[in-house]
Image (cartoon, rainbow, N blue to C red; front, side, top):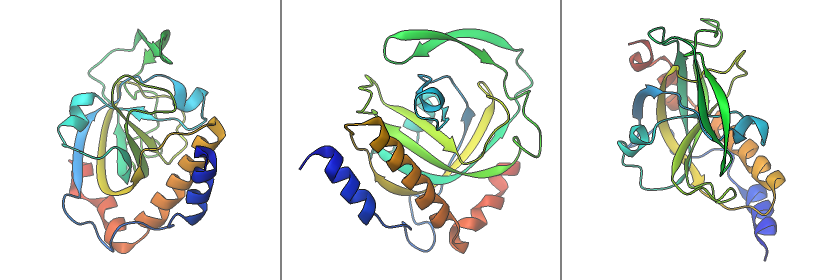
Length: 203
């Protein structure tokens, strides 16, 4: 059986809700960090923008399993920094110029300082052959602008599935969209929805 066939079959049979009725240890996991530049593939290649976080931020969580997690996240302006243009990686070997606005261009109450559902990928991204592990958060909201350098708070409440490889970009995108729907369904339960107003996000 080929990878693409196995992926398609597993996607059809995947549960639409994951986890118990409320988070169980080690969840919830809370992180307060900043958004860094990734490889620039989430938006340009997949049409699914992600906020990358520093490696030490997720290494501190001691997450042993690579794969897809779900929970809540919020972005906040970091006004202590001026706008800068930095050279950052693009793809595996290239570079690109990235504007770090530190969230200053986001509208408060619409894009920033609002808690949104999220899915988070932790792993090696085997489809792209990354050389080091990374953590990427897709916040389920259409932001008005990019927010490199902004502060980000996120709370992991559960695990969706292990990391997989794909023979096509289309199969990868389809699985990510399934992850998003599973996360929304799972977070809609009272035991998870209540964490959206957790004091952690307003501190």
